[in-house]
Image (tube, rainbow, N blue to C red; front, side):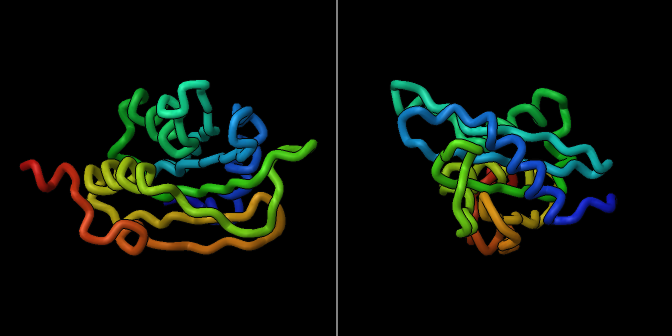
Length: 147
């Protein structure tokens, strides 16, 4: 695999979060997806005046991975979030993916036959909590259920 650490993934997610477009919630989120060859693909949340059309950072990053034909190659994911301040998202409490994102992450996990590590970091500081996707989304429904 690669030498990318959870802290490195969280650092990339923090960089991505600086590009969050979140004028309605004021909550910026960044995600970093590690692929099996060490490539990191990032995404930031993208809100819309029609709230239901907003995109989460994790789905933006995973859609980018999918557009590259690499959804089966997802190995790990890092995510951070916090209220947007003058220097980007701020806060010292790790955030985890929302339910919708957990389901989208599960698609990649099942396609790659992996129980993905999901690293949840704080917008600031060193706090990182790592879960397996199966902990965040037990009894998940996905591609394997449709075969």
